[in-house]
Each structure stands twice: as C-alpha cells, then as structure tokens.
Image 1 (tube, rainbow over the protein chains, first blue to last red):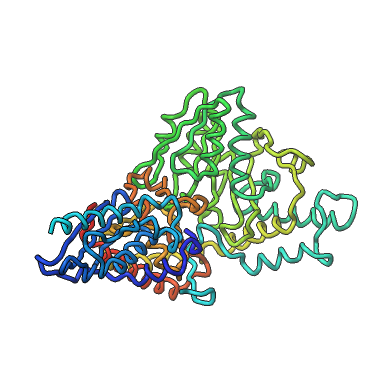
Image 2: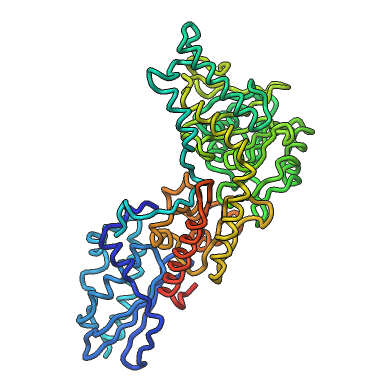
Length: 126
Length: 393
C-alpha cells in the first residue's frame, strides 16, 4: 500500500495513537461502548469519563487501517469538553475531508459513528 | 514524518531485485553509439551483426542456467508474457487434441488470467487446491488429467510463501501421459538449481528482474525434441522463428544473459548466506507470540519468509513500518486491499491473510538489515496489539 495514500494528519494521528490498555477507569464515572470486529476488519472501543453531562476524558482502543486509527484518535480529541448527549453532531463523514479518507473506506468510519451514537444514548437518559 | 533521506531496508526481493552492477555494466555497453546498439535483425551491416552476436551469447547463457539448448530459448518481455505465450500459445495450438487445462488456485495472476481467457474461448480449466502447506501433490495432478487435457501449468516456487513444488514427479507423470507441462519458474531460476531435462518440463518461464537483471526482460523455454507447437500471441516482424515478433532489445537480453551467468556461478554461496540471514530473522521475530508461519517448513526456498501476525491489521502494520520495504501478498496485486488469495486458499481467514508479511531477502541483504527488521516489526506489532486489547474477534 503506497505511503502517498496517507496525508500528514493521518500520519501524525496514527503514529501518535497511544494504547489505553493500562488505564483502569473508576466504574461509575466512565462509559464504555464498542462496535465492529476483527473479522470485519474494523473494531473500535471508546471509554468516556462524563462529569456533569460533559465529556472530561476520552480513551480509545482500535483495530483497523491507518485511516480508522487516525479517525478514532481525532474523534477522541474532538469530543472532550462536549455535551455527552451530542458528541459528534457533525457526523464522522466530515472527517473524510481533512483525513482524505478514500470513499471506499467510508464504511469503516461508520463503525466509529456507531460507537459514538451508543455512547450518546445512555448519557441522554441521565 | 520520514523523508526520502531516511534509511529504508529493502526486504522485497521476491517483488524485484536491484540490478547487479556487473549486469548494468554489460547492458550499458549496448546502448550508445560507441556500444552494441544495432538491431539484431539487421544482418546486412556490422552493428546488426554485432548485436546478433551478443543476443546469441546471452541465449547460450540463459540456456546453460536451466540445462537447455540455446535454440530452445525464446526472448520475451518477462514472465507475464512468457506465461501468456506458453499457456495461450500451447492450448490454442493443440486445441485439436483437447481443450482441458490443469493449474492451481495459488498460481500467479499471470497464469490464472490466461487460464480464465482460455475459459472464455471454450476451454475447461481445473484449478487444483493445494494442501495447507501450499503443496500440490503429483497425485492431485494425475487425478485431474482427462483424455481431453493438453496442458498442465504449475509454478516451481510460490511467490508468496516460497514453497517448492515437486515438479520432477509432476513432469514425469505428464510426460508419461503425453500432456504438456508448463512451469512458471520466475521465483526459482537463479535461486535453486533448475534443469529442464531432469524436471521433464516442456515450457518454462523466467524473468530477469527476480535475480538481479533488468525489468522487462525474460524468456520462455520451449522444448524442441520433440518440438512443442505454439501459436504466437504477438504478430509483426517474425523474430524468434515467428513465435515472438518484435525487435529484440539487445541491452535487455544481454542483461538477462549476464544475470544468468552470475547466478550460475554464485547461486550456492548466495543461497547459503541468505539462508543464515533468514533464520536470523525468524529467530528474532520468535519473541512475538501468536505468529503463524505460512508455507512448508522444509520444502521452501531460502530467501523467503511469510508470517501472519494475529491481532494486527495488515495495512496498519505495513504503514507503521515505513523504514522496512516488505510485501503483503503478491506484489502484482498490491494495488488492491483484498486479502491474499494464496493464503486464503491455504485456509487462513481474511483477517490473518491480510495481516501477513512476506519478507524476501537477497544478495545485498545484511545482518544489520535483519536486526533492523526485527526491531521494527516487533515494535510495531506490539504497539498495534496494545492499541486493540480485548478486540472482539
């Protein structure tokens, strides 16, 4: 796969992605959601700390292509500080432009959107 | 971000090789006005005769590396053309005797696609499935033959996993049944001894750029005793006895000849050194758990190692190692993101097939290169696995 398919933002986000495996959140202040599978080639987990209906921290785990890793990393940064009931009103598709995601990979980004929507649902019941 | 001046370790020799400086020097002597630049078909003047002499010297060199007669060597642009000429040419020429061809699911696309073309022309093709090691048993070939079979086409060494087929036994079986055998030897010539008489092959493809010759230069061995008929697939000036028209690229042919001569002289020492490096690579990577070896543990070529890494997405693994030039799947199909069809044919699931890396070493590989590869691969595999702990498989 050619290196020219990935722009500088994707490279920075991909190589800057840090594992969250050593992090053990306190049970009652964290929300966890995941979607996808290795068999399908894309899997994403988000862990959000929510205080006063706002996201104060976001961690992620991901299995996927470089664009997926970059997109999850980007989303995790963006949603900190946002209302937990409306994490990503603009949708994941808007990420395609700055990350220059090929159109054939849009389905992978929708896995990220699935996880975000799951995160929004229980928070809206609080 | 890595720039073009940063180190890149090349471990994709199975995709292509750098030209040996000695080959480049021989080729350079056939390009300019003060060199042997003439058209080898121009027999009426000195430059043409000089070019013809160099072409025939190269034909002798190619013949020697595979144990053939010079008159049995046809120049082509590479293994893809040689495969097309062999498969389409032989099947079409002999179509009055039968219209069935046997090949394997794990062949290179340069064999599979001409076979699919034959199917469009009304031929039937049997695609044999190899065992989990990638081996096609001679018995499988025999069982697939029918009175209608005119051609069997199998590669000598698989380009993805490096397994070596028992061509000698298959050749014997085909010869006994008067079925033509074509062998794609793109990954074997220059790497293991090849003797067309001992292997009992009728047609054999080879290409220069897999063993330190130039890209765009290859040959097709066509047995002459008895003569194997081939229908040409290119028409024009009638060169190469009418089998392959087109002006002979003297510099390319000289390059192929020189590469053959060097391979013949240095094969044993190269193989020994590369085998040691390959084992060093495998030992170094064995610190990782959940790594699967693809291919046969013994019947394999020295320079190639194919491993699948569990829990790692293949595209990310390659992207995460910009300083290491390796392949996932066949180089000729690397424009697509499909999991390797070879590994899928061996029973690997899509995720594991896609997370495979083919490391292929060569005569310019060093222990430092191997140690660098070990550091980079283990580091990135561990990082990507840490990014996806507890992923739902």
